[in-house]
Length: 319
Image 1 (cartoon, rainbow, N blue to C red):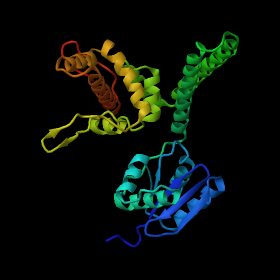
Image 2 (spheres, helix red, strand yellow; image 1 turned 180 degrees about the horizontal axis):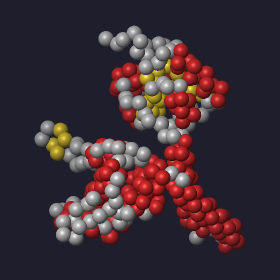
Image 3 (spheres, one colour; image 1 turned 90 degrees about the horizontal axis):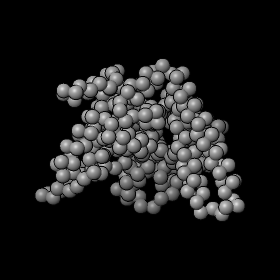
Image 4 (cartoon, rainbow, N blue to C red; image 1 turned 60 degrees about the vertical axis):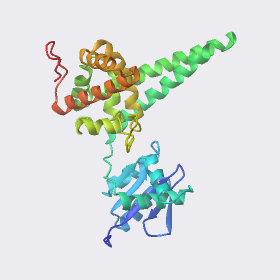
């Protein structure tokens, strides 16, 4: 039986406001997404003597409220929106409104009781913001470059000028990233460890540092599942379905893909593993994803052990 003091709160977050529901109560509370509104929201949650607050990851809109809750010492779990939506459907909530979502998240908190989320500190958030900005600039640069060939000759100078500006901005962000890593001795040490691996460059290393702070703290299986490179079974009865990967952190998978692509050419361990899979009839795509997973597990073990890359020409061992 649920203890009387267990209070579970669900928070639906939008750009304009926070919709707050308490499990077992129909009435909701609403707070504006402003500094004053978030302060009032925290006071409300504290007054409830809340056991756990659950909210969805919403691309950063959840961070002001999440950080305020963390400073107040309230247990908070930020969950995957897809996971929360599937739970709502399984609970019979097929409609979707802000109020329904808030109630569903409160129910999710009570039924699932997810582990509290460890929020990044200010330095980690700054590093992640720089990494996100770099990705945005690269996307804009590629889009403008694609437009260049179909743009009338008279308009191309302006487009080329914009491409030059974007290139300068990307270079500036790269400098800021390098400076940010230098100012943190721990990051600098891990950055050097990661880049000691053939196939892992500065972009892969900085992305892992900013988007995967759990690196070196989990087991190989756990880190692979977290990133989304662990194959999941699709079996039922006598049927043995095809194993697939899903979910996880797209930004990390993207750089791991490029690192594995380079690694199967220049990294002896990955190249041998890749060729072995191909010789056993695996497709190139499946083999490359397997190399992504192997590379991630190796990097995770290196960071955990505090070691750099080393290969033996006789055994192919990695340390």
